[in-house]
Amino acid sequence: MFKNAEESVVQFCLDKLSDLCGQRVTLQNRYSVGGGCINHALLLTCNTGNFFLKWNSSSPGDMFLKEAAGLQEMYSVDNPYLLVPHVIWAKEADELPGLLLMEYLQPSVGSPGDDEKLGRGLAVLHRKTAAKYGFYHDNYCGATVQDNEWSSSWTAFFGKQRIGHLVKLIASTRGLSSSDIALYEKLTDRLPGILSHTTRPSLIHGDLWSGNYMYTARGPALIDPAAYYADREMELSIMAMFGGFSSRVWSAYQEMFPLPDGWKERNRLYQICHFLNHYYLFGGSYLAGANRIAKDFL
Image (cartoon, rainbow, N blue to C red):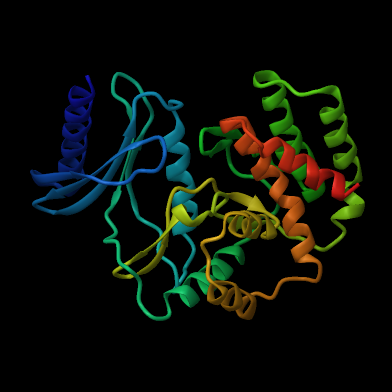
């Protein structure tokens, strides 16, 4: 079953590449590579070059279309420090699994200065702004649907479409006590006073832990986004939560795009979303972690 699906997906991509290239594209070899926690991934070596393919027969049908849109939004930024893989083709699930075909970026152990390039590249990415917070459509952070309806207020967006949305998802699946629900309702009501700093809608990767960036032969690259326009400090919250970013990344970012006072305190508040999302996906002690943060801000 798996092999039949893989064969069909690979042949579909070869046919699509042949149409796009105007010549027959033939497969020379394929190798299994890392594709994240939930997807199958292959390196396709072809007569016209190398390509990265990931696919999934059980994920939400439009997941790769939404990921492709996020990649394309980041790719549109003229960024001299940071790579984003070029999307060749994405399709939603139908009789074949959903898939995403991209250029292949050759992994590398990294070169001197790559940490600084990553920090500067994130600063350049965050300078791309929009009129409102949100994105052109809902998308996914892992397997969790993100509510990206446009909003002119950051506190309203963060309160309703991040904290409130996740609380509703958890309540409908894992269940939440009335006291937990009341805790997050109270926190949401107080957000305008807590988040009094000036913000603007900045393009962020949205799920930037250490597994979603890589060093390549051409420099640092971002992969697997959950992109939307947010207070840029949202990006930094997950970076700090799980680590994996050297001090050189942080200092280079600060040099390029200094952060306003109080960002370290807000960083912890923003981590509530990641704790809640991880509890929704995996259970465990993540809810207790989110509750501790919420109570600290009340």
